[in-house]
Length: 94
Picture: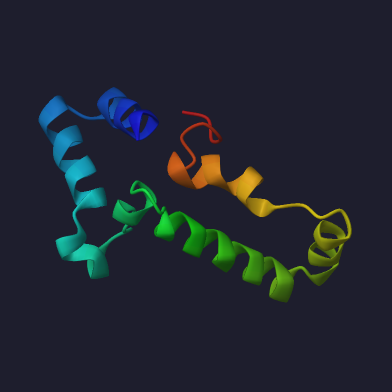
């Protein structure tokens, strides 16, 4: 979450950055936005859910890649967790 806060503070004024973070994690409006509130609890259900979605998309859209990942027993949670937890802040150039 600190990476997301840092990026918002780089590009937005402090108050707008604060309200942007609130919008991301406020579950009252989860049908209207990216809901990452369940990424940051003890069970991390949202993160696990989204990794399963990525795995399924790879299986359906990239079957050769899926077979290769299975062949080498690659756990996508090791690859995707940082991307999703930081909303790609550490991956894409700023």
